[in-house]
Image (cartoon, rainbow over all chains, first blue to last red; front, side):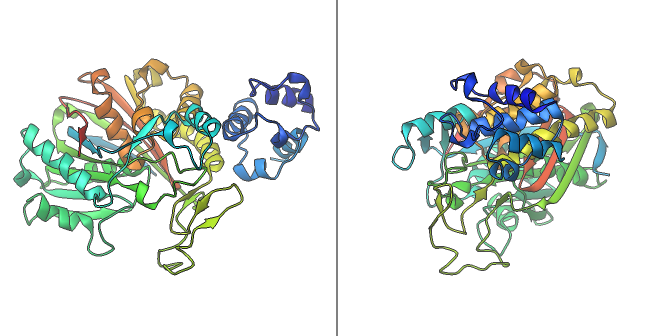
Length: 75
Length: 350
């Protein structure tokens, strides 16, 4: 999976945020819709799509969507 | 190891008691905004939960459940060979609550009684211990009490867990009988994540002091002391959605059964979204999933028997059940068992 596909799956976890706001450089914790439920959805999405377990610390230590993508690649 | 099979042992009766006092999530404004509350309900499913009064202990809820079990079934206290009390909220540090319960319930002095400190996986571990004892030649009936009043050690101003936990107590009678057939257990432990759900102060590693009882404001806005429970919800979720489906598959492989053989799935009521993600990964028919989290929240080790009692109308005689739970530590497990002629009482209020 490349970063653009990851961003697409990332965006699918949000119901109200316009799709065009999601880019590799997007600082996802600054999105209005970001919260505990979207965080859990992202963890579930990575588990389902990549079969990789990302932790709460991984989310806390990432700022952009690309940061999180790179972290999954390192696992 | 961690995979165990029993033959001819089963659950004869289940009784559960909850406190009368109801806390409605949407009404908990003040510390939480209405938007936060709506978001929390959407994420966890918790609409309301029950909270014990200041005087009410987990043992009182278990006592009521056990007395109802004796009064409304053919089970006689004199026939109990062993009593297991599982809780993180016992009456005292010393003696164990199980010892006091032997006397309160008027069980024979020959009763084996002991306490176990387990969290949300407590019912699965409790069943394993009860089945193991029942497997001994001279033991026929084991009374398993699982109770919690976690509201007493939870900050209502905690963003992660302040609205999640409810109080309840249960009594389950495990007995011998060829009709029960084979039961299978998978039990697991990974203590490397012990910080994910923890009460850091007040134990013997970090004894109670003015500092441990001081309410502090934390990075996420939560206000709690070191003697109140703390949970990294994302860590629990991440571990659970990764490991729980694997454990179910491991157990089914050991038991040589297919997931389609299961009639009802009773998962620990941790969080509705989490339960549904695990069910989806296992390709479980969601009509077979039982829930009680909307009415009672996460009641830790009691949530499995509470769900069975609350949803008893959906359980048929001879149903194959799959029970699954994860708790602090992490500690997790899965049980496959057949429910034969099991008396499940209505949830009682105290």
